[in-house]
Length: 168
Image 1 (cartoon, rainbow, N blue to C red):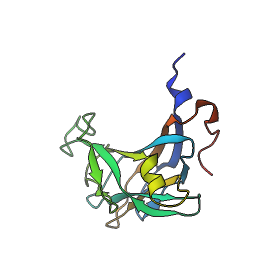
Image 2 (cartoon, rainbow, N blue to C red):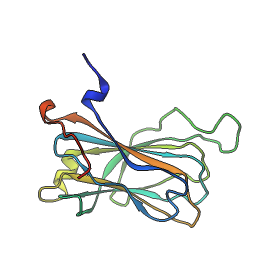
Image 3 (tube, rainbow, N blue to C red):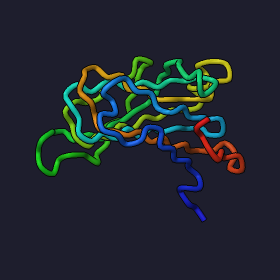
Image 4 (tube, rainbow, N blue to C red):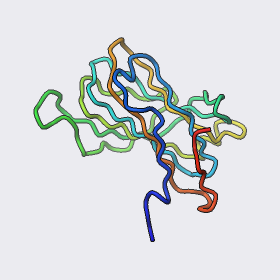
């Protein structure tokens, strides 16, 4: 049987919280040792005009994940804020490549989804024995954003070696 949840590992790396990004916030560190891809879903609720920027960090352990890396991303954010029925969008943007400086989130949009794609080869190229990643949102103002971040590990290297936990 082909069951999605048996091939992919879902991890809640930043629980849904009011004002999640009122200050700089880094997610739990994810161990990609047995996976080829990690997709972070940054889901926002009520937002302000001063959203921050998203960067991805790599490292070789759960306490040393600080090397900024390039990554791919796309957004699903409503084009118009404040219109009834247009609080979110299910139309993704084109896949973009972010530099190590990351990319800016769109402010004053409710119900945005930011899809951040991390390739294990990019993580490994960042340093010796690098196989851990985290995501950071650097706030550019003082107002908070209701949000959560979910990580999905996919493409297991060896199906029998899928980790019971991905948070070290």
